[in-house]
Length: 139
Image (cartoon, rainbow, N blue to C red; front, side, top):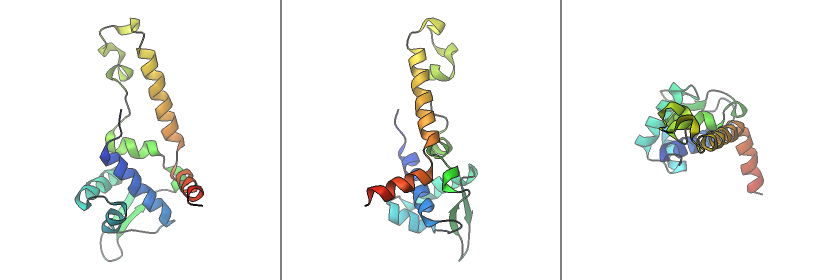
């Protein structure tokens, strides 16, 4: 499993917005420039994040993008699933009936456990934690 480039860009954009503080907006072009994300690609990402209600957008001279909730209320899982959909390590971890070996497959439980661990880890990693980690690493 590999997080897509689009999800990676979304995470970087969200971290940029989390750094701004409450109710501060950023122009999509500014986010794209500072995070080295192609502007047209970021526009699509921002649209998906807006549909998932992770960001708010507004047009005009005082427009821009802002987080829809506080950084501690948004997890990496929220962002990754908004872009890539639900995390699945194999088809059978979501639906064991797909597997030709069904209930006798010795690998099924491993896939399900690993998937659950990844989902848990990403759901616990919120943007306030990332900001704190970033601050500690820059000292």
